Image 1 (cartoon, helix red, strand yellow):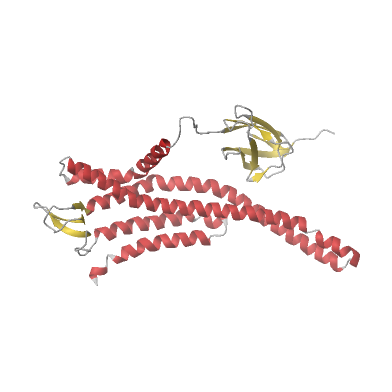
Image 2 (cartoon, rainbow, N blue to C red):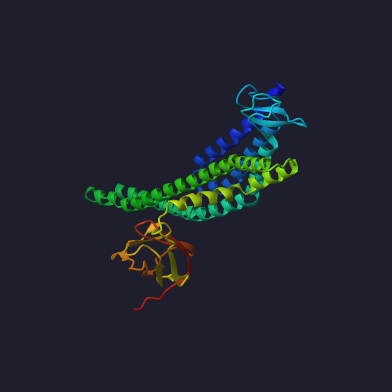
Length: 362
């Protein structure tokens, strides 16, 4: 029975990820999503710690007769647990014998990096999404309440109205229903976006936990070829490789992607400016854009709602544009304004609506 104890952390490793994916998919409200960073922290911590424990407490040699196995290896000076790849026996130096502590410290380094930076990065990204998601949720709740109130009032009117007017009144709630349905679509889109980003974060972090020991093994292999035999040096390199795994892999991906770009291709980094950066309802807001695709139609969105513009906004030969917008009636506070060209190059800025209305000239 004791020989199977190492299965417990392995099962916890798998179960932790399954639980967080289920919680993410089952979440329906922005208040649920606001708790996700906590759930994800405990789930990923359980995953990393369980993975380390499952490696640290192997009770016996696993798959000893297979090309890849975990065995106790005697190099003539000492005996230690190793991941045996291609070795024929436990005493010969054929194949590669990777010390288990190199793998464990690689994972530990990745977990330390997650504690130091990963939590903060995800919490910041999730916070931005939840601000907009919460706004859409509140708008949808108000629209549903408005629709239900109107529908109830119309039903009462219909009961006491002549037959000739019933058809007119029965169609009246449609405009409220269309508004509610439109918000419901945006709510569903944002829910999908938050789910996708959350699941991507979980799977990406799990991926780095698993890739980190590979980098640690590479470091150990290079040092071994160079003649290093000091385990403390191996340990330091292994934990450092794990800590920097995400940065190294990210730079490697960027380098590979860069090789496929031709010299004529340039990365679009469009920017927009809002003048002023805050204002009252009905004031004029000037949106200026630069570095977009030249001669392209620009789409302006306000809090994820595309603005209906009579004359299309187009960039000039330099990829610049200017558009003046009358600030619509919206809640006071921070709102998101974004601009996007036909090649999906986009940029967004925050705009604050302050209290008070601009007096209209009689």
